[in-house]
Amino acid sequence: MRPHSLVFCLFAGFVMLTLQQCEYENIEERYPPPPPPSSCDSATVFYKADIEPIIDASCAISGCHNQGGPQPALVNYQQVKFYVDNGLFESWVIDQIPYAMPIGTPLTSEELQKIGTWLDEGACDN
Image 1 (cartoon, rainbow, N blue to C red):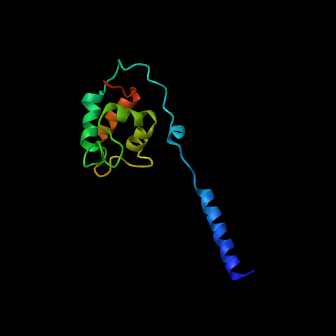
Image 2: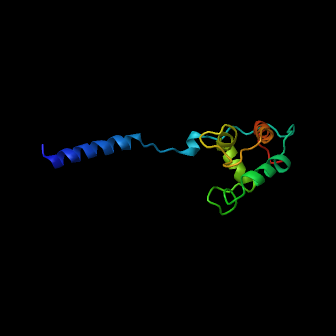
Image 3: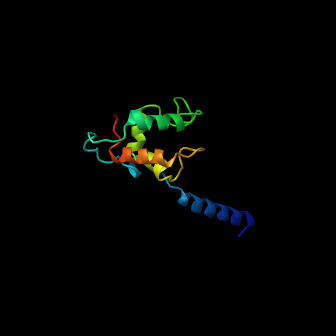
């Protein structure tokens, strides 16, 4: 076998092995929205009073998640709810998988507890 042919075969084999490792991930399929909550009447944590201030102070600052920033905007309930419904909000903020949000100063245990309770109560717009 000629040296150029051997190099080409090795390169082609490397490319094929590398491409087999690639995987397309569809977020909508991997994180389907959970069933709608039954009711928000018994909520103890409120979006406007408890959750929105945490997001405003920790997420929608320094150009990260504010309108027009490099990351998806989280400046209103509908924007936050999109990530709650597909499971990414809880994964990133509560579970810290695969990303620990917010970057920089972590949320306090009290803030995490409020967010967890709000999620458990159905993440209502209240």
